[in-house]
Length: 500
Image (cartoon, helix red, strand yellow):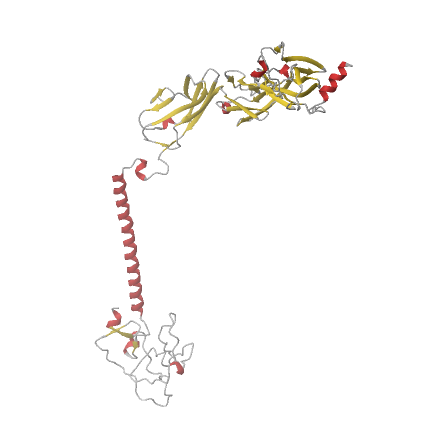
């Protein structure tokens, strides 16, 4: 019966108020972190006239069981019971006075423990009103212990490229449970594990898995633990050991004969650093002019064909040995360089350019002179044959040298002339039996002003011909003017035209 009365009292989470106005005021919920301090408020509202307070008792109610924590009695004083004696005190000093004041009996919990989480009852015993009480629920949180660690101080990258756990993020003994996530540029995967502890806390563990290699060295890993509204971050930098990554520098694809000061350098990216470099020439021995200096090959003297070949560099550290190679080709001249970059001095190049320029100029002058001579001779040849548009032909002496005219045949009354074309610039033939032969086309009288007859004579009497028909007078021995020159075809031209 007494047990049921206690349960009924605990279930009353509201202020219990008597008919005469007494009440106990408390917070319904309080919380705190493990190791911290929290206050549990308890204030008695007395009536008017006030009732007498005989005793105040704080009790812990857990799993249906009450446990006394602290007692304040006006006659006996204050008492705090184990296991709370070292951690619970009454906040107001008046409670501890010889004549105490018990209206405010707030207690302070120090160094909270997870086991302190429970419901706490503040009960007032009054006379003659009886008991008045109220209750507060105390929640205790545990901030997790977070830690991020490397799986090993150094991680070795193996040629097999196996997945390896490189770092671990731990959130231990947290209440409530925390959340873990990773921030990194590394390509990897995270795995999670949760463990619930007997005291109500939870431990979360996360491993980050990658394939160790050169690209993972010195990469940053950040683990972020989110606990309630708090964000906790921790970071590590990976130390990954790997075999050398070898490259050979120095050959620019432009090694040409007689080029000075060439060299090859073996560069190796390795962790730990390379301790041994070895040079060799594939399918042969190194040239006699080469000098080995640390990780470099220094070629003494100018470049020769002897330097061509495939050069190999072996770089070794404590993890392993890797090889780099370069194929060296020798050309006769440099690529994309001016002529003096090919072993010819600027002065020599200038002299050669001058000689070539003179030769080209001479050829051009000869070609021009030949062209002028050709046109001159061509013009002279055409002038010598006669330009019948400018010649004046004379019957008699002229044609007597070219075959003559028979004296027994009458002269035709009219002459017809062909068009003035290159093939037809010839005098009309004088026939043996028929007199003058007509040209292929008749003379067009309407175009007399445009086409002059090839044979011109002194105009005499017109006889009975048309006005546009020319008449000829036969002069057996015409006189040739002093400024005229006789031609082989019987024509004459002026000296002025002859020398044009």
